[in-house]
Image (cartoon, rainbow, N blue to C red; front, side, top):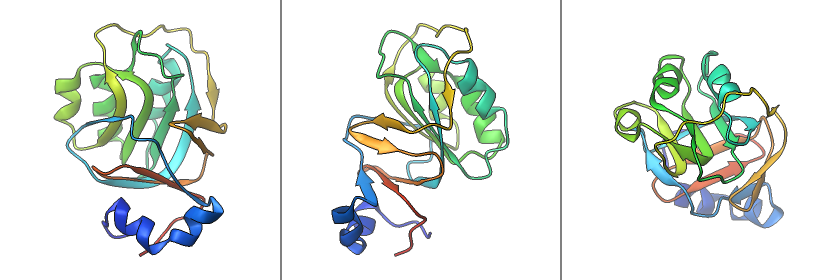
Length: 166
C-alpha cells in the first residue's frame, strides 16, 4: 500500500470497521524511531518482563514485517532496547509495537524504523526465555492475530485481517 494516513484508511474502509475486519488500537503508545509511518504483516509475541524471545525474533530477517509484542503492559522494566532495534533495522523489520517499555530511547530515535511503546524505562528485563510465539494477543483493547496487517502513523495504529489498498 502506498503511504496514506490511517485516517484515509479508516475513511476508505468504514465497512471493514463496522464488520471488525479493521480495528483501531487505543491511543496509548508513544512514538519512537525515525520512521513515523510504517506498515507490514504482523508477527505476534507474548512475553512478560523478559526480552529473550524479542531479541531472537529481531535477529531474523524481517522482510518488511512488524513485530507486535504483548508485554502485559508492564512498566516495571524495558523489554526492548537500542541494540535489538538497530539489529531489527538492519534485518529489514518495518516496525515494532511493544505493549511495555523500551530503554535507550535516544539510540532508538536514531534508527530508521518505526517503534511504538508505552514508555521508556532504564531497567533491563529478565532473561529467562519464557513466552509464546505467533499466538493471538490483545493489546490496547484490540485482539491481534499473527499474520494480520498493521498500519501506523502519528494518528494511530490500525490492524486489518488482510492487506489493504486505498
